[in-house]
Length: 313
Image (cartoon, rainbow, N blue to C red; front, top):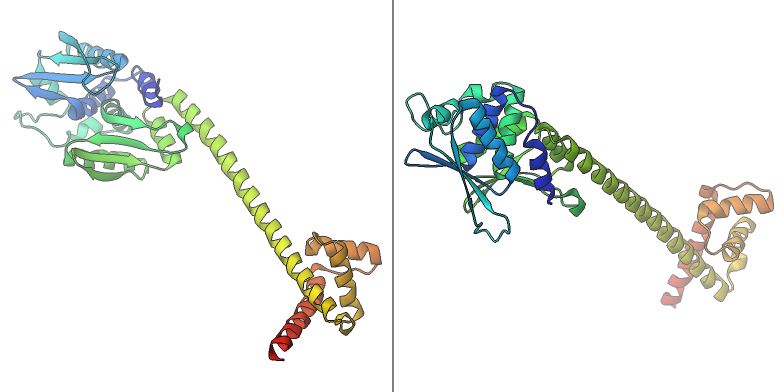
């Protein structure tokens, strides 16, 4: 079972008030319904969604509903449930804000359909049940999308999402509009908004695991960068020490700098901090990392002058 299916199965039968059922039906029908010859057809591959829709319609409007099962032409192994509504159709469409009182199509539903937060959540749940999908967080690619065919509806749904600060965006596609969210935290908030409690817990568990892995990788990368920095610095110091040795220039250094040279050769892999601590312990004379760095700077400058003089001669 896909993650999207598990979410839809979970929210298909959560407890709803009458106004929430109307809002949910409105979100689904406006984005899935097909009307011809005064007959409304709704389609879904999900049996629980089919039961959700038929139960709500029967409870609200006390109508008879026909259901057909067809082979799915979208290369899916699942059958397609076709819900056919003929009774009280104008009443239903007006009630869910699809038609005006003059029986004219409304590009967006009436205000009362989404008059409170719970109705907005229900409407978004209906849109998601109709045209939504969310990637399994295990894929590490966080993505939620709703596919909407009409421009007014797409803008309307985006505005509803962003009431909850979800940062939803719209892309124009060949066959309509894709409203999408990419941020993991916002996707988790959306799942919460539509009422899928178990799906939120699963999503957050996986997201927390990914965050820990990413944090560990960042620390490892930082540690490796520090190691590389220590190795490169020590290698450069040893190279300059070799130049002084090859040119019999060690005696040009003062005693404290000679001491730093001796300990660098003795501990070639130590960082400056480690080396300063070793010298302080072994000699009894405290030296800081900064002081040790100053001594190596003298070695490096002398080696550089020797090399420059070679090229001049």
